[in-house]
Amino acid sequence: MSSHQPAEDLASSRPELETFSLVLGGPLYQLLNRAHLGDVTSHLQLRILVLSGICWLPLFALSAWEGTLFGSGVAVPFLLDIESQSRFLVCVPLLIFAELIVHQRIRGILAQFLERRLIPDHALASFHRAISNAMVWRNSVIAELLLLVLVFSSGYFVRTHTFVLDASAWYSSLRNGQESFSFAGIWFFWISIPITQFLILRWFYRIFIWSRLLWQLSRLPLALIPTHPDRNAGLGFLGASAYAYSPLLTVFGVQFAGYISNRILHDGAVLTDYKPEIALLVAVGLVLVLAPLTVFAVKIMRAKRAGLREYGALAAEYTSGFERRWLHTVDRDGETLLGSADIQSLADLGNAYAVIKEIRPLPFSRDTIMQLVMATLIPFTPLLFTLFSFEVILDRFIGIVF
Image (cartoon, rainbow, N blue to C red):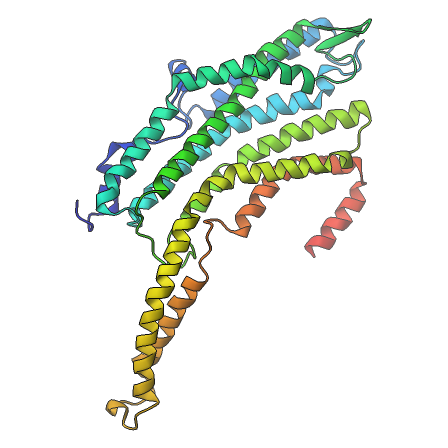
């Protein structure tokens, strides 16, 4: 294959890249596809309504039938359980919406390896083989079965020890020290919560596939460009993958914010009690999304060292000739200094060398980190009103901005 072949031909010459998607595969996708809900674009709203409806509507109906919808006889009625409302009406839709974002962006990111000529001709087969292998992992029936086993085994322990408040609620009641689940509670613990846990674990599995694929690509003999203006030797486009996963971090924030809201509203907790946990959540989210990109650090720094060495030698040769011509001779080969192209060439060489010196080992910026942090923390904003009045928050916001 010629190195001068158009990028579009390079992408279309192998079907692996054209059909690649982290989300269009697996048993659950096939099940949704048979139910005419598999398309992540045209069926997005319907999928959100169906999955959120399965999680939330039976709980609403059963709570109304059992008289725990508004608070009759229980300390925590269904409609005042902020954690459950946010989980099924916000988190589930965001988990599904994130599929659309990842589906649209990740394939384009992989295509840039070809568009930027980063994959040499002799490594193209390995590049497409890595993509094909990732799709095999994505379609694994065993993997999703193991996720289901995890949800319905250890997941039950997590559900009953994490989501239960120390008071009678719409999903359970305390009588003589014994806890018994209502009909709504049975659906809650065995249908609704497992669905959300499975969706989250499935996202963890997809990130694992993405991480493995990036690691395989980092092993290829990439044709990096030290003078590329992205300051990442041509790999700066990989940072866009972090933005694709930001809705997932918002899901974690919404889920934990709902958990804290319940404790503040029903157990008398204070938001500041959870500062370490919130900081840990932000840190874990950053590691989850950005750590896969660090596998290219060695390659980028190797390109930087090679670039500094090669351009350093070139600069030494050029500046030596420049000085001999313009500083150490009188006639200057009959040319005038004004309008000489040698000055511009010297400046261009200096700019190229400066770009190489500024190469960063990680293909993401501080702006990327800040956006991910904000995506995680935005759900906690309403909880600030439990600490400060609206006027105080507004004054501090104005002070920060202006």
